[in-house]
Length: 263
Image 1: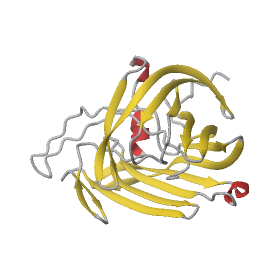
Image 2: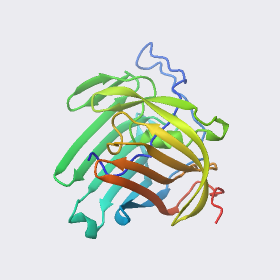
Image 3: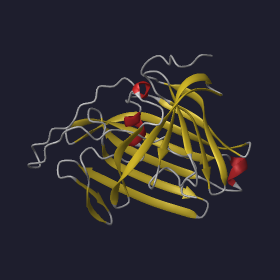
């Protein structure tokens, strides 16, 4: 199993213009958004076969500066509970540095520790030259390419309310040594109840080929709050060892009111 919790990672159109005539004449897009900001923290219980197997946390603990541009430091961590660790121990950490204005990553790191499996990966994104640099080489990337974590936060800025059920969107995502197309299907609207409350949600399905926060053997379904915050409320997926649910338990530091919570 390549990582115990799916990403909730998704969506975006790559229709924004960028000029690459030289390394300095670059016009990055500017995305105005109120979905998330500094200090946001989302905590999830990970359920496996009616057992709470772990905890996952999305957080924006700090702001950084990269190439003179302000950026969010976004972290995603997963840890198995003590009672589940004797069966399968998980201690994963993902970190991405995302441009505050263009919502594209400048740097991505991944540290996976799952059972006997481990993996460390880091990519530096040079959007001026249009390349990603890893320890294994230098690879071309399209404008505003995403990583597996930044894609989720970009998705939270999209207006799913104007999509038709069945409509698909695509973005370019980089992982390991190449960029690939990530498609996301909008399925409709549903209410969902978790420990954090009952929410009106958008239901979406990322069609992941590679580079997700875990390797899926079946459908991934994601419920995002149907309001301006668009926080991931619940994720359900099938993995090699069964079915896993990630359900929102608590949240704080939101950028505005969570109007999708109905009780």
